[in-house]
Image (cartoon, rainbow, N blue to C red; front, side):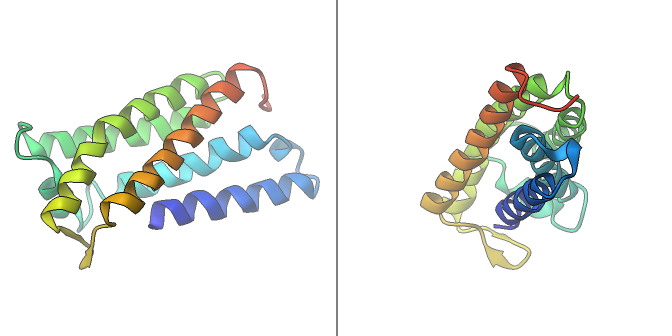
Length: 154
């Protein structure tokens, strides 16, 4: 739930700042790029923090090297977040992050079905998690399309 809150709150704050005259934030695409970057930096931080063992447990048993997969996805999230901040790279970063979200979704399914916890709380149940994932993917696709069309600030 924290990633959804970070994405939503940061987007609204940035969008309002844009409407209040912060020229660099005049485009909704720029605001969404920055909000997604914040969200992915938050989620990436868990890959090396105290929640790392819980993320490793989320990796479906059929996949090899859960520790390596958690590290790799964390690195990709950081790289994607950084690339979202560069207008020319943003469409590519957004599409890469879309693919990453799709690739990581089975871990969310496994975690929900196995009744795992993160930070001492049960993971988000499958239906709400699926809806959130659709929202995250919609945001990354919107950035990819919007940034390619030039609806961004240089």
